[in-house]
Amino acid sequence: MTADAQPTTTPTLGTRPGDLPEPRCPVIDYDFADPARRATLHDQLADLRTGCPVGWSEGYGGFWLLSTYADVQDAARDHERYTTTQGIMIPPTGASMPVIPAELDPPEHTPYRKLALPFFTASATARLEPEIRAIVRRCIGAFAADGHTDLVRSMAEVVPPLVIGAALGLDPAACADIRRLAGTFLSSAKVGLEAKIKAARELEGWLEEQIRARRERPTDDTLSALVNATVDGEPMPPRTALGMVQLMVVAGHETTVHGIGSLLFRVAAEPGLKERLLADPALLRPTVHESLRIDPPIMHMARTVVDDHRRADSALRRGDKVMLNYGAANRDPATFAEPTNFDIDRASNRHLSFGTGRHRCIGEHLAVTEMTVVLEEVLAAIPDYHIVGERDITKITWRGGSNTLGPERLEVAFTPATLAVD
Image (cartoon, rainbow, N blue to C red; front, side):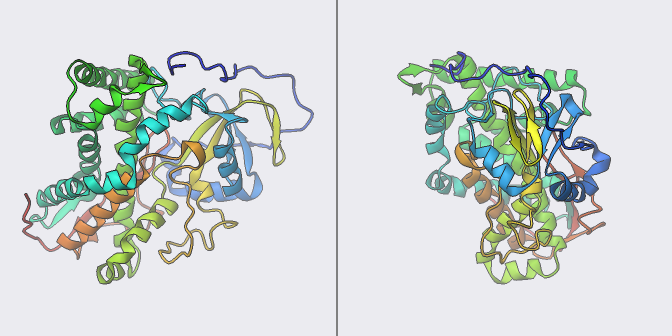
């Protein structure tokens, strides 16, 4: 069985049976793609979690929104009632093929995940860390002497595409284009579909060239190893290889762009936090995880209902789209004490920002390491960096794509520094 073939376990969805006797939860007005609502997004999600934890929205063709930690975790782990094979994005992107293995369910999903996982383990990431650190130091060196910068533009948008490029063996010169194209086709529904599709096709074409070149003449890099591997004894079909590589390239950097931006904002904005980190580097990683919890780079993912069933007081029907809202789940007071507080001393931080279950993000070690190195190097080079402008997290401008969220910009000032780079 290949991913290009139709898996025998994939349900045929999209039709709805006759009305069920139970009424739906009242229709909710939730539009993540509306920039005007992002400042109050978490307030709205808190209201939904309390009053309508499984609510129906008419937006983007209609979808259910799950907002409690328990519901989101359960749906993410239950591939028998919630399938990924009908797409994982609300609204959908302009991609022309499923991303592998994220849009496969077990058992088809399993061999592809096993194939990719060894390249993103903790030990594999540790071997890459010196290169990550060198990339970050070169990036900081480009602005350290200026005394001011926008850390979103100069750090958050620059480092992640270079890191995923290094991890896969891509030409560093192409990383800026990867960032531009991925940012367009993953953009919100407010961007025209034609522009999204055009960017998706351009990125797909470039990746197809990379795959073709490495199949014709393999090189000593991760991308060559991936695209020339076999699954169940058979070579991966070209479209399957493209779907897998596209997921790694796009998800491997787009989410970290927003994660770095939010992290550097929080460290500067939270009273006393920077001073604690400078005094105790052991707190760096807990700070990264708390930033991921309270400001998840991926706010939600999607599933499709396989069989009619009830959740809370709502009747979910075969073919219905379901939004698993990680942003709401990560602030559920039933799981996290004082969930709106940024607290790096939490005894347990079981956030869902990397998902959970069999579709948990395989790149989590790379993302956490990358964010930790960025924070460590920024504090070492420009320890007195401070925000110029609005420090209130509820008043800054947020930007996002189909399901991502991070600061639009982060203007900072600091004592100019001379940084020695390789």
